[in-house]
Length: 110
Image 1 (cartoon, rainbow, N blue to C red):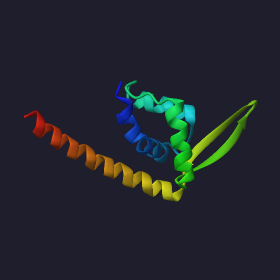
Image 2: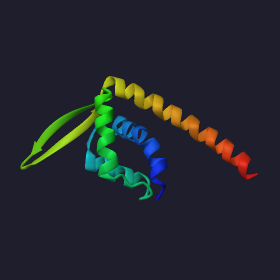
Image 3: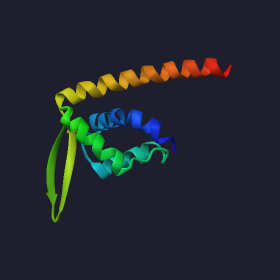
Image 4: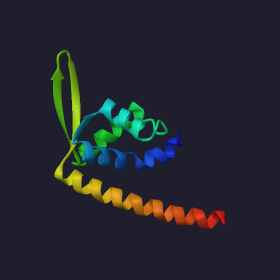
């Protein structure tokens, strides 16, 4: 498991990338996919996930669709056109950040 602080700083990027790749997803599905992709090293809590989803929706990056499945109601999230552009930009920015951190940490370790 990684520290919550590291996850907090990357949660928006993770969500945007997942939705860009998957199309639409509901909250629990997002948490399970992150857990699966990270081999259990990243665990999203509802307390972190839903405020982030609501913030991204407020910013116009996500749209929601409520679907009834029998007695169950699911709220699906998907990217808006602006969200797709932002997802691409954030992933590129984060990849550059990883390269920079790798360089900085390697210099510090030697």
